[in-house]
Amino acid sequence: MTNTETASMKAVESPELAVAASNENVVDISAAHRDSNLDEILDGLDRELVGLKPVKAYIRQIASLLLVARLREKVGLATERPTLHMCFTGRPGTGKTTVAMRMAKILQHLGYLRRGHLVVATRDDLVGQYVGHTAPKTKEILKKAMGGVLFIDEAYYLYRPENERDYGQEAIEMLLQVMENQREDLVVVLAGYQERMNTFFQFNPGFRSRIAHHISFPNYTLEELTAIAELMLQQQNYVFDDEARRAFGEYLELRRKQPHFANARSVRNAIDRIKLRQANRLVAEGGCVAKEELLRITASDILQSRVFKGGLEMELGDADACNESDERRGGT
Image (tube, rainbow, N blue to C red; front, side, top):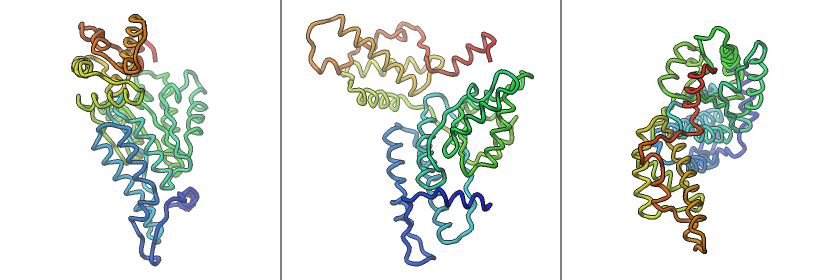
């Protein structure tokens, strides 16, 4: 461990991390765990995200590793700063960004990051379109992310070997340098589809060697998607009636079989469309309505979806669909 890293870790050490000890060779792990507020953060992740048990278990393991590393330092044991760069793989809408936000807070509470914020970036934020454009764009994003977590979504789009005039390699080289030389002040999380990330690492081994944690985010089950929908509705003061709940289950069965299904993102978009239909129905009916009717979603609000007629529902936020459209148009 370098002197710079040691100084940095001590400088950002969380004041909440209190270690009770009867002497310099004894630490109270229970007290340290309690004072770190880890349970509060991790419980928040449980409340915020349905399912993802293997992901949550891995995050808890990382948190425990970091806590013990802090305690080892307290009793004078040599401790290298853990490698914290990560790779999240999975389909869109599986909670990768939310988990990254929580991870940033964990690292801040344990004193591994100064600020604990999250900066989300894509290729467009990092790579320029002409000579001399990439370096300032990448530097600006890195500057914003320092002291926190830089989340690079669909990171494989940084590398386009088929285009000799592409400037993504310049951004990659800058990222690798910062990930190595300033790892005490920045954590980088790469995200995307599993297969594409594997190919990306094959052509960019420097990234693979700098990433310690590879976390796979599974698709949600039908039951979990339904629970996500119910949670979203509750947060927005809506509710399914019994027939609507059954209709939404049928909707999900059909929607999951269509292209570009994006898990929780597709559920959110579906809820937005259902709210539009409910509002249109209430206005068309007119008259006076009880408060309960403003809350209630009916089966008719769901069954109007084109999915039930064999039509496709595209996701406005589906970056993968947009990228495929760009490629068909010859875009970058």
